[in-house]
Length: 494
Image (cartoon, rainbow, N blue to C red):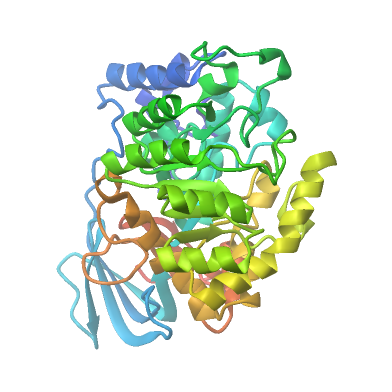
């Protein structure tokens, strides 16, 4: 199950991070069988790595650092994630997983360092997507709902690598059993972005994310959970006590924030977009649990009523809000609540939908322009997320979604949003942050997540839509995930 297409025992690992020929991974492959539950997958992984003499999975435990020399980027122009303009004539020194120093001029390289002459290209922070679904982004909905979970996790691992190679070095997962994937990425078993997991999205009976078949109804209060809930994709709660329990379960597993469904959604057919799910007391129960764990709640909400109720309950981030009105935008600005919204413009930004889901999708598209204009007019703190789902063809448009923002923002604003500003939203998780350190910026002691761009994205934001061509180097945590040839065919100097 965990294998590549090559039979070459000495296949190089430097470009793709392929580990399938290692003995411990072969042992893991033999132990992953069919009909795995979410917990079974984790247990299988733990058993396999134990036999191989590897440490068992822990929350965000990094892979043992491979000995590597410092890397010095010279002759580089820097977009630092905070400024409107590039900083010229700089050198950037990376040691281990951190940016050690920015310096002007021609400073000597440390002993043993690798020097990369960037040819006056632009170095910028890795991109951040604040609304992603690692388990469901690249799989068709039918497969995500019915396939063996072992297959779902393997497909998610493949999509994680593609996400990283698009230049998105960090994602915030807003619903799904992403904990095993996060552990595999952090331990170096899988190539992928940093993952800020929410765990199961918390919803009510009939709310967005309640994909249970009608044959599962009726359900008695306190009765056994459904097959859907056992996967960890969603958790149904209809009382404050149940909601507190489900929130604590996600935090116990390592959630960095809690995702609560405040209203209807597009992809859940029986969940009207105008509906409101949790009452104020229930939302406050979830917020109280998150605050007790020193983190925050993000609430899925489209309409003014659902957004305003979430704010009244103490939510610190609203997801979507495409149908909000001016009073709602003003309230968000007043309360300093984050807006994580997606620039959905048309049907090319979604998988094909039919029936009620398509009608709801068209409502969202129609509201996008107004929502962004209101957010900008009122100074709402706005984050970029793509929320691309159920298609590996669609997820390839992740960078294209970023370029949609040119309708409302300048290029430098867009780049700041997808780097430094998004990192500020992630920092709301406080001590639940799985990756302590500064993300989204290029400055001393920041985590070394970097992109070398062949061109100037402040002048031409469309460069981010073609990462294969335009991102010459992709670095995550000081490790070169992509070290590509220039368009002229000559490799960057080593």
